[in-house]
Length: 316
Length: 160
Image (cartoon, rainbow over all chains, first blue to last red):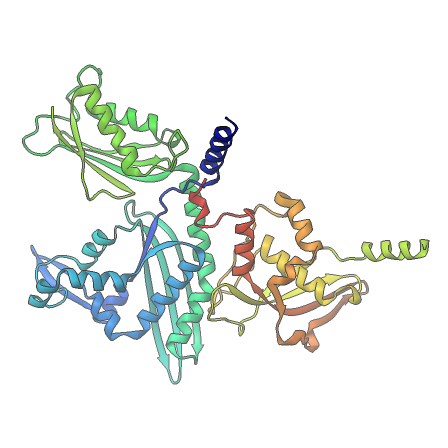
């Protein structure tokens, strides 16, 4: 009996001593579009009368050593501060291996294969995209350097953090000067990121929810009532979202018969039992509720991430 | 015996308070993040009170609670205070941290503590100002505070 009691106590101690960790937002660092453009690593492709810019990230990392140094310096800061991040050059290599034959047929970035950045973002699925830009104005053996770092929430497009700096008349080699400015400026950048993370923890992760009705499904989201609930789908969904989000957040950003979008929905990091939860798990509850209340099948689009969930309304 | 105690009390009373300012040194830019080289200007009524130890204590105090503003130009960036909630938020912890001299693990003087002609100034009859260039291991200091759960790290923000 004594042994059993000890085992139970030890088990309980073990359960409580392990910290519960929610999914941390992931970062990915890109050379800024302006930098890519200024250094000629962009192809213009005609897409339905519009000029689509296709960035050649692979070429940028191979042909320009400074951008690699700058990216590595920023990533070293991310590692030091404990931010979870994905490495763009490695993602590009991975992508290359996966698309080996296709890439051999078409020149890098050319053709109609779509935006390189979009593909990378789909593969890496980051929550925060960080853009790095610098420009150099040489005169004599000295140069002026301008540097910018900007972090944007990949889903809400909200600016998370930024910093910029100018070094005037430095005689340092460019790579050394870049490392200095990044090391010097990164503190304030990271501080803003940490404050953003604190806001996420305290007020929930800001997400966007899209409900879509595909062709052939006879549901009107703005006019049809949810069976037995006395509310149209749009209102029913908003009520559920506000009831289950942090601080009753969430507003309707767009609504018509086939699509209703909600923004500023704050999803908690931990569920009622104190266990970590992510956006997808939280969103699955809506699907379950709709199924129970109205017999409606709603599927979550597999491309949904931590900051965005797309629901496909299937059938009654 | 009484005299000794009195003298000890007198010495304690004369320990200067946290009266200082921090200024960035343009040339002191490190290529490694997590370290900052800057100058701490400490103030007191007597020059002798402004020992190297007091100046170093002030520098760490400044990084913890006041932050350091960088000039607009140059590679140096500003540093927000590591503990924006202030000394009083964890008074007992910081009393021990400063009184035991633990703060010295995270700071060192640069150029062996050499001071220039303009680094010791008498502002008025009872006002002295002493400057000292120091290097603070901000990374180490932050990690220590994160480990002791005084501040949140990016990782432990999402833990409970």
